[in-house]
Each structure stands twice: as structure tokens, then as C-alpha cells.
Image (cartoon, rainbow, N blue to C red; front, side, top):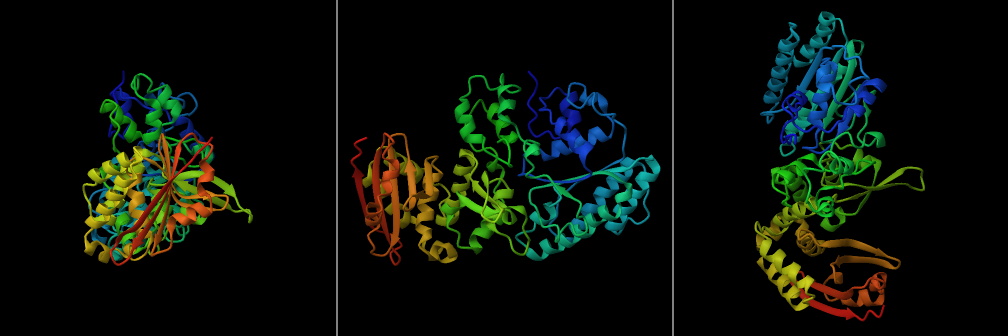
Length: 512
């Protein structure tokens, strides 16, 4: 069998060193033949860099690399000058960003065997490089930019540097518009979709293919890829469980797997664990959570418009936008509303993200860096329908949260905090949970579903009888046709004690 391309994002290495390659050249050919300026947003470690490198090898005319691939006999493989830009290294200051750009341009200039005079002003340098490459090689120029937004993302925790980075990139990318007569093809990738006004001013012909249905699988592995190319590697794996853990990323088309997950899952002999998110949670997510009082359960089933998921501005960042663009949320469905506009319904893509993201939420909300014991007690008490143990665990949980954690987090100042804590612990246990579960007469705060039991939870702060609302509105009727025991749980919290005041439950007699 071919080797697994873990951490390899150069096509030449993959082909020549006998690594497995999932052929994306049909999509590449379609893009090349049908457009000129493209932008693609995908989460990190999704294969953007490898796709960009594939484009590079196509335009460099390296036909021999594509012998067994779709594009081999369908493209002329003429050689074009290629400028490749990939941001990395220290980007934490205005000077560092400018120096990084100049260094990248120096590398391209050397490879292209050209010489530019204006090497101190990066914008002029870039413009001269495009023109000089065209004149020397007698062919229009290809520009490929990987992680175009990294100088901004690396500085979301220091807004002044982030704004400087935005202005630097704006002046840099404007050169593409000014150099149109010399350009053959331009492709930019990134995690986020900054508005065209703030970053791509003047580059109004940039075609955003992020949510184009026919390009939905441009990055990532499809189910067919796993069933065919990976079949021998996954022989003996529980494929239903693989889908639950790692599939589910949807960009308005066929769902895909994160390649990083699948490759490491195979390497680690079918061990189900967090691979993608273990590489680090972006610090700016925690910062946004600290700045805003988000009701955490609502992040799982979001309804939003195209504007929210389309772009964000560094000075007004919505957490929902960041979560979607960085892969913590994905598209569940898209509907046309009464005003002929699109409504997007977002969800957490899979079990890996649900567990890992909510572990992060637990650390943020409770200051508990090792929540395994409490998670285990919650899981077992719900599995066994031992509600006395469930209550005892929750009381112990809230009692263990340091007082200063309530003080430093604005979210602790409102009633959604308590529901958010319970939700995060249950969701991070891998249990199926439905926040704000809709019925024909209202919304259930939380519905928890296990193999044998269903729990319907209502939360209140103060003395209003929480379980009374569940019974009066017959929330449980939605689940009477399921062959499971149904439990109604009403939980009241005391704001002064910051803990559970009343905990009542009843078992529904299901005669179905």
C-alpha cells in the first residue's frame, strides 16, 4: 500500500515518494478553464495548501506528476511563471509582517530569475515582480496565495496590530487588480472571509467559491474516497463510528472528512480521539467568549443569514462567524425565506468537534482543566437513570467553580450560565443532546437522548417551578413514540448561592 501523506502538502513529494493522493485535478481543471480570480475559505488542516501546490505544478507544466490523474490528457501543460505566497513565521508586529512579505517576494524573485529595483516597498516590489515575470517568460503570470489572512488572525488578540495587518494586506492585494493585463490565474485561500471592502478593495472580480456546490469537495475526503482509496487502510474499522466522529463538514454540497483526522486515525490503529482540535484552540475564540455573554447551547443549532457567515470585520467580529469559518460549526441546511433570501442553519459537524469544543467551553466557564471525573459521573448517572446521583454530581460541580470565575466572566452574570455549564459537560461526554428542542407548543431547554432513556430538562433561576412548565406544555409527547423511558427534570438555581436550589424529576408512564 502507498504511504499516508501525513503533514505533506507538496504534490511532487507525494507522487515521487509513493504517498496516497486523492485526485482533485478535475476540480482544478474546471477552475482553470472557467475563471481567473478565485477565493476559497476552508478551516485549517483541510488540504488547502496541497490543492494550491497542485495548481502550482499544473501551471509549471510538470505533466509527469499527473500521469495517473484526471487532468493528464486534458490540459496542455504549458509552462507559466508562478508566484507562490504562503504566510508563516513571526507575524506579531507591523515590522515583522512587512519583513515576511519582503522575504517571500525575495524567494520568488530568485526562483523566477528576475530582478526588481523597488525591493523596500513591498507593494511596488510585488507589482514589479508580476510585470517583470511576464516580460521575461513571455507568458502571463499565475499568483497563488496560501493563508492570505494569517497576518490578521495571528493578531486578533492585539487589535492595533491586527488593523495594521489589514491595511498592509489591503495595499498588497490591490496590486492584483492593477496588474490584470499580466495575470493568467489568481487563487487565494484562507480560513476567514474578510469583507471585500476591508481587504480586497478594488478587487471586485474575485470569485468566492467557498460555498459553490460543485466545489464543495475541493478540500477534504468524501465518503466515496474512504470506501475506495482508503478501503484497505480502514479494513476492520467501525465505519459508522468513523462517520459519527469525523464526517459532517458541509460547504453546501456533499459532506466531507477532515483529511488530518482520517490519516491520524489510521496511523493510530483506529483509535477514536481528538486529532484536529488537539493541535490547538485559537486564542481569539476564548477572547470573544470573554467579551460577550453567549448562551453556549444556542451555538449548536444556529439560524443565520448569508451576511453573517459570509464575512467579518476585525473591528466587529461575531463569534458565530468565526466558529463557522474555522470549522467548529458547519452547514446543516439552507432554505429560502419569505423575502427570497437564504437562511443558513448551522450545526456542530461531528463528535470530535462536539467533545473537544465543549471541553474548551468547560475550561472557560468553570476553570476546570481536568473535567473527566465529572463527565464520567454525569454519563453514568444518565445512562443508569440514577437522578439522585445526577443531582449530587451537578451540585458538586457548581460548588467547585471558584468564585472569581463568576467575577471574571460576564457570562456568569445571567441565568444562561447554568444551562451552558450543564450543556457543555453533557455534550463533551459524547451524549446526544438537543438544545432549545422545538415542539409544537414551545421549546424544551435541553433534551438528552441515550439508548434507553430520554431526559427533558427545564431551567429556572429563582422560585418558579421548572418542572411545572414541562408538564403543563406536555413537552414529553414529542417522544412518546420512541421505545424509551422518559424523565422530566426541573432545575432551579439560586443566584446568591450560585448552585441548585430545587431539583425535581418525574418518570413518564409510556404505554406505547
